[in-house]
View 1 (cartoon, rainbow, N blue to C red):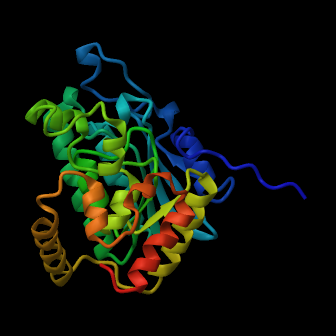
View 2 (view 1 turned 45 degrees about the vertical axis):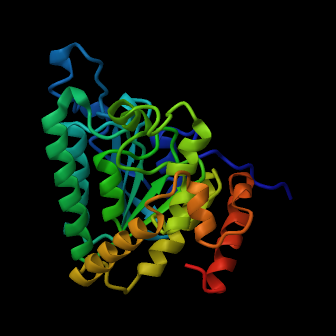
Amino acid sequence: MMATKSVSYLEANARERVALVLDAGSFEEFLPPAKRIVSPHLGQLDAPVSFDDGVVIGRGSLNGATVFAAAQEGGFMGGAVGEVHGAKLVGLLKRAVQEQAEGVILLLETGGVRLHEANAGLIAVSEVMRAVLDTRAAGIPVIVLIGGSNGCFGGMGIVARCANAIIMSEEGRLAMSGPEVIETANGVEEFDSRDRALVWRTTGGKHRYLLGDCQGIVADDADAFRAAASQTLQAFKGNPTALTLQALEAEQTMLEQRIARFGDATDPQDIWERLGVEQAQQIPMLEAGPFVALVEAHRVKGTP
C-alpha cells in the first residue's frame, strides 16, 4: 500500500487549505467570488481588487463536527485586512454563534491592516476581536492555524491570541509588529529584517511554542494541521471556552514575569537556554516531532 503524499500547507492557497483541513467536500462557501463583494476603497485608489476581498469564509465539518472556517489569502495584498475582509470575518463568527457551531477554525495569513484602508481596517480588526471573544463566551472554541509565508502580524496577531488555541508550523510566524516595521521605526541595530534566521528565531513557530504563545506545533503538512485542529477541537468539547477575568490576570502576571526574566536577552537562543533547553543552537535544525519531544521532556522534568 502506497503512503499518502504529504501536501505543503505553506504552498497551498486559501481555498486549498480549507479543502485540505476540513472533511472532503464538506465546505460551503459564503459570499464566493461570484457574488463580487469587493472593497469600496481600493477601486477609488486604482488598486487591484479581489472578488472575495482576500478571505474565504464558510461552513463545513471536521471529522464530523460542524465548524465554521475562514482562510485569508496571502496572495492578495499579503492577506491584509480591509473593511469588507473584516466584515466577512465578523459575519462568520456571528453566524457560528447563531447556529451554535461546534467550533470555528481561522486559517490566518496576514501582514495586518491594509494601509489603503487604514481607519476602516483598524475598526474592522477591533470588531473581529470582539466577535472572537463573543464566540468564546457563547461556548464555541476558536482555533487558529498559522503556517503561511506571510505569517500573522499586526492586529490579526492580537486576534490570534484572543482565540482558545493556536497551532503553528515552524515556517509560520506570529507577532504584533513585523521585522520590517521594527527596523523602520527603531533602526537595523534593533532588528535586522534581512537576517532571516533571526526573524524565524524570534517570530517563528518554535519560539512561540517554547514561550507558550501557541499550543501546538506541526510539520508543514496539511494533514498534520487537520489532525491537530481536530484533536484541539475535541479537547475543548464540553469545557468552558469563555475568557475569564482570572485567566486575563494570570496572562498579565505571566507577561510581567517574562519581561523580568528575559528582558535583557539579545537573542531568542538566550531565552531558550534560560528555559533550560540544552544545546539550544540545535533547535532550528529539529523537525517538529523531535522538537516537541525535546520541549515536553524538559517540562516533565519541571523546567518552565
